[in-house]
Image 1 (tube, rainbow, N blue to C red):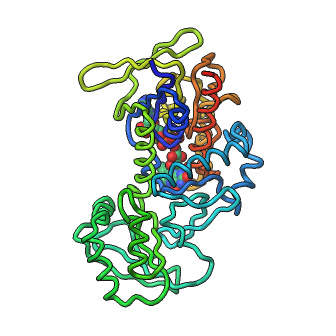
Image 2 (image 1 turned 90 degrees about the horizontal axis):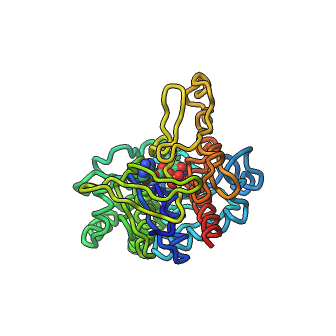
Length: 394
Ligand SMILES: Cc1cc2nc3c(=O)[nH]c(=O)nc-3n(C[C@H](O)[C@H](O)[C@H](O)COP(=O)(O)OP(=O)(O)OC[C@H]3O[C@@H](n4cnc5c(N)ncnc54)[C@H](O)[C@@H]3O)c2cc1C
């Protein structure tokens, strides 16, 4: 029997699992598929819309899960995250005092809280020249958008013989390819300033690769996140999954929950579907981290929304006509509040279950689009739910 079974392998489930495995708990993680962070920029938005995330966290919006984590809890969870990533060579920089700007493929500046070190030189505040190096055939990355918004920028296109982000990132792991790349860039006689590239500097050792190229060219280099699939998001996901394995956590990947066994007040086991036969996974406690609609944690019918694993009560605007604002592009459609309401211990309300804890974007009132708190909220609530569960296990 496991001490803890975590359902959902997104940022919230992975952080909860790592925190618990780190404290010696026998941990199993079950996930149906790859999470949303693989689509994200890989940056950790904690609270957007203000120059400092702290402003939003100190007085979180009404009902927001940050109320249950608290300022020190958020700070601790982000430090724990940074420590994991630093230990793996994928350093993140930043703190909750400041939102920093990164350059997007559209030439705009996105404000975010923690960024991979490979994006550190993106925004200096001055008007230093930026030379963008793109790749022949690479889709959804248009340096001309960036140069049209930034008069002190230019670009060149390198033919790597491959044009997908994953293919390019794989090539950058190879030192011979990197030598050819550097030689070509030297021959271009790029004006002084920084060099920007789509985020394809390797699948795992990106900081090392960036520093090696930067030293050769004697220029600062930074990555621009691309549209999904996003290599920085994939690096982040793979690194956390690897960390959990290193800490002894068992992982059941590509597995959905077929059935749940519960007593009056406890979940006792879940059964997962495997290729050969159903497997029963027993636990003393469970974490639900299955994400929102995109990942399948919530499912909408014509007039109702339900939670897909335990059939927990879901908060949502009752009338379908009220789910969306008139303007589709509005940020903050009422349906984005939908989710599971929890108490201060991250147990679902009105479910009478003492050994189930909920975290991540499935939580009610998260409004991750409106408050721009996606990955940050996943990390903070994942660690907070794990701490609460750990106290209960004793
Ligand atoms: C395109 C896009 C870009 C984004 N960009 C950013 C960004 O730049 N910065 C930022 O901070 N945030 C961003 N976000 C938001 C952020 O990625 C998410 O809010 C956050 O990662 C959610 O994490 P989570 O753990 O709550 O859920 P998820 O990442 O949704 O993970 C849930 C996991 O549960 C699994 N699951 C679901 N049902 C079951 C089941 N029945 N059994 C087993 N497993 C199940 C899913 O397969 C999935 O792996 C972006 C989101 C999207 C879609």
